[in-house]
Length: 482
Figure (tube, rainbow, N blue to C red):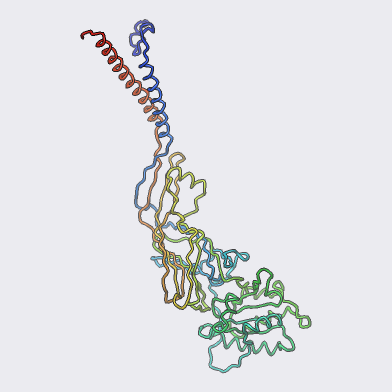
């Protein structure tokens, strides 16, 4: 067996008897200072170990060719009716999708941007409306001309009032006019206003009665409205609650629709034709008319990751619009690219990179207001967005988070056509990659040992130098030579 004395011979830390050591005031001071330095440096090293460090690099976008980008938005248009509001998407590869409805919701809003009811349903799209044959045969006018002075009188006198709001310059109004007048004459003969009075077909020239048309939120021509006695005016702020007609516009279709409206109303009582008593076969051609002239559009669209446009405008295949009266002013409540990141995840990302997320919704809360007038009409509002993808990789839970940030530049420009709101987006071919760098625990332990050993050694050198200096000074005072 190896003797104990041989084991003791390899001791690196040989002990000096306490009786042979001498404590000094300077050594005590240096020891206290050394201990404080050790504690301070240990705290700094611990803080550095717990702090998340990241490395940022710029690389080519790693998205695959089939990836789509999601655009989420919530935009309020105080002067664009939900009746004609359309969301369109196009890109440089030839994609052109018009009037997207599947992922879009619309709500009529008042001038203060508050919703006035439930979701507004636009109904089926893409239906070609049938018009009467364009002939040169003469016809007599059978509909009643309404003005601001006699409109309320007719709406309260007859159970059903069907009004054609038109503009003489409008192509579609001109095509409707012969069929409308013929149908009105037939209905007038069948339901004499003096003897029957259940239904009257009328018309309003919006170039003459502009205020009356604005009161009923007419933005496209022709607009056919169905007013029912007793239900056309509500108690809440006088909102008009009526229906819009979107069916065929030939004479036979118009007459058939009028007959359907009159059928539930007994002649002797002339009671109100309730909606739940109407013929279900005509439901697809009659829909509630917008109560206000504004619309809030929210939802999302998917686009290819190439330069493109998101366009919101008034669109219809059977109506005309007066560009000088179109106002595309809007307030952006939310606009972002990519999937919405949960607040908890975003908070965790900010722990990794404090400045991230500052530009993923740059346009939120901004207003873009124009005031159409003779000198400032046909105003299109354009937004130019440059989008950059950022990927964050956290090593603690091996999580990958994608975020899209963008810059925005907006302008109001004059247009020769119907004004629109256009978001032109362009994605950068490069992406930012942020990686969390995990610090090794063994590296932390090594640094702590280096701190303790280094401070102890430096303090020992200083104590030795101070002690020898003091001894030298004492010898000089005693006059000894050395």
